[in-house]
Length: 437
Image 1: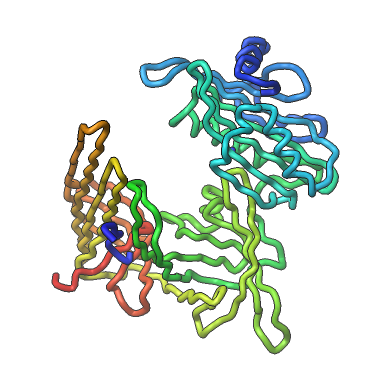
Image 2: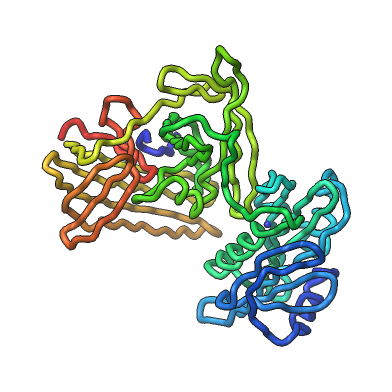
């Protein structure tokens, strides 16, 4: 294949001109922070320290944030626009999205780069569409549009970025996502939270599933992958696809990183039989989109069968457990197009001793070549990770490494193969044991 991963490892009028005029007509800056009622729509606004301020007049509620020119970035602006709730049937959400996106006609011509859809915690339909980028008069424009619909009303929000990218874009998008999660179409709506009900839950433990296949890489090639994915079920109804790091509980982890999590419940079965289906309500984006999927379910001893796939129970490490050996995580990816080729590789080694000590080493390297107009250029780079040593501690699904300076790094860890330490999954990476050591 030539490629391998080595281990089991989202303009009120046509044109940019209107937007620039709109920005120049904004009211004097006035920072604020409070829940806002927008014609019956309630949202929680960014705080004063965020740099957002109320702006403009008209039917759209607007916020603006300015970004000054720096050595690395042009002067930029971010605009958040929010409609008052509009009377419309739930089924018309997609048509309403098209109408709202078309307020920026040039952007409506662009393909959707990222799309999320599902329901909110309050049961409303929600769609998120991201488009990029229109370039006019040295200004780059990108857009994220969100539509939220109940049975009788719907509302639309959008973030428009003008010459905003990189960390600035990430910051503006995070503020927008937080605002979207706070939207309430009705006064009885609850805040965004993954709160199980009495009908949820029923499982307890950590389970692993071996996922294999091929996927495209950034070099134009294909990589083979073999991942031991995990699902952690809390008896009350929370689940997570990542192990909580450090000493956090699954509840704390899901509050901080909801896109790792969701809610589940068992259904089906009867008095003499166990549940026959598993409903999983996964948070699929920072905007609070929840996708609902029902899968076939059965138990096989301590293990689970979900959608006809094996999920094996993963026992936690005992407090103070010890391991002995050398484990290596290796990755490689490469590819080639008509005018370029590239590759990247890395290797990380972790040695654990029964006396509670450890050593870590590692290296990484990359190369790339390009050919343009008969001229070929290339770059090759490599680096070694400084070695580290100290003491380790195993407990539950946590590995603490304390180096000689006293600094402790906590990582998630589990053994996907029952009764074998031949493979460790540490912080999501697969470490194979070197049996020759």
